[in-house]
Image (cartoon, rainbow, N blue to C red):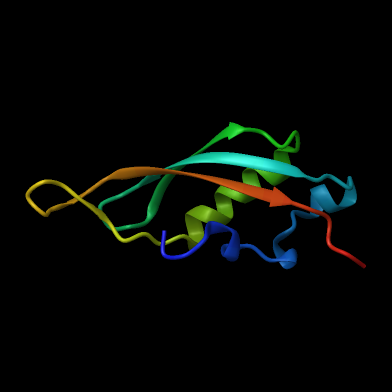
Length: 93
């Protein structure tokens, strides 16, 4: 990725359902990156226990993450995978 995936998130992104239920947790994901550097797939490999945090993680990564495309042995852009871990903590008042 162009930078750390964690920098894509802010406290404003906290899913409202998770805020209401005071849910926190860590989401681990496996990403599929297309030849254009955009995330084309996001699979939760370890759930936070909160569906709102899990789906919010993938939604934000799909819309904001940008990668330098991987290259094959001939130098052509190719798809690739990456993994990430996002820790959600309730914002301080």
